[in-house]
Length: 615
Image (cartoon, rainbow, N blue to C red; front, side):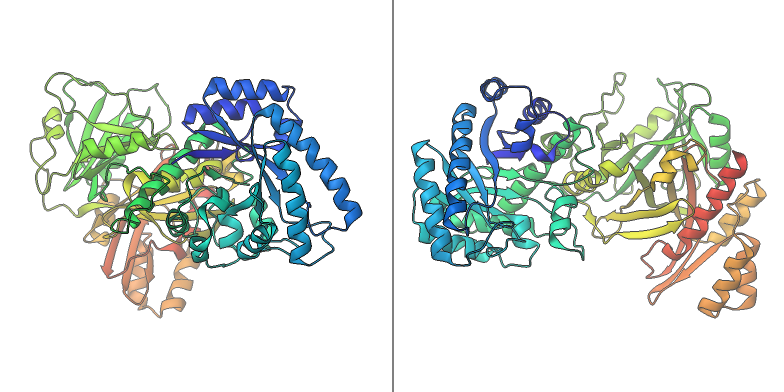
């Protein structure tokens, strides 16, 4: 599949965008007119740069308000178009995007519009240029692709075809199935954009909230499948208008874009398996991936070893041993949970979640797939006889390792710490319930796609949680059996500006247990001060759930929080924050599958008070 990306998707200068697209692995680009207008490089220099980078110049865009106009205005449009065709000849690009009219349209007659496109096609042919006519979702008279195609058919010109844009089709709820009835040779270009489902005017939605395929809510696999069945064989390009993308690092965004196309290519190929072969796009597969079956380990990196290990002890963990060749690394164990503590950093460096190990069926295949999806491998050395751990960096810098699924066996790497067997098999802690990861706002969509494509986790509906520093957006990535649950949080801007005393927005490790009351009492006996919960919370709790007074009193005594739904109950407590990390201990009763979302504002407010008191 030939991949392309519009320069409007990326930050920086036109030249920087071209270098980033080439480095990411794209085959070509769409040159957005404004990027060329503001560039000091002549069109010939851009053409030569593209050739040197191995990039095709697949499209020049946009040409606006061309058709549905009165004759005197159309004469001016022809003059304007001819200037653009000459420019395209200098650039060396042969296809121009013509958008349906939104500003100067006066004649709502298909025959008039087709005749004007035909005249533009005659002029384009003189310059060796093709016109790809696109129905904008907010076009004055033409706002859907089937209408646009009827006009193209009426124009009946070899240099006039259609451009199909997934956003303009799916945002309006149009059925994309009729794409299959369009003659493949009349589909001149395809642009892809995903988007979250929002209730707002379509123009604002389009200009600010598009995302790469796999990062939104549209059925992108279904859309590309229709194109394959139609026999389309041209470029598949990304056209994303997104405020965050245009402020983010250009190289990261380009890599994220290519990852989205490779993921979509693989998913579409699998969706079409078994259908009669007509794949002129030549969709390429990725190495197969299975969902992770659990957490193998969590690694904490800290410059404050004493307070970190003290907290682990208070939560019931025991020292499993020190690594045989890495003197600054130790492992703490409780039941099946393994916390690796790495203090190979400067004294007093903040405590943070550094790495996550996921149990997978085939670590080699998982790593190969991740690399094919443009993930960066984690460089790691080991002494002879030590386990080889395979991993890549997540978008936020967390190291993600693919660990061989041990079943009920102890992971082989534990032997490097002298821990040959599980400690305390009767532990209250039974596993990692979930790990909550904070994401920079400009890379949130990238993280969703990363965990979707690399680990086959599914994104759940996002929620907004209010806190003293603003709304926190939270979206859970999870495996189908919930063995892995990974909530991704986007911190409000105020949090990034120091509401947490200069620290990054905190992340946390949630531990599953069989008896949260017993776990809280044990932690208290060992000196742990749990995150305090105000009296007002318990008064409100008793009202909301009509709870027994003695039960509420026992919760309040231990600073426990409570939630309930139709399936079951949820009891939990939080520790204080070390650097950017805190722990949560949870007990699920019945079929409760949530995360105690009504209690999140209580936690956020308590953390806010504590950090500001410290500051």
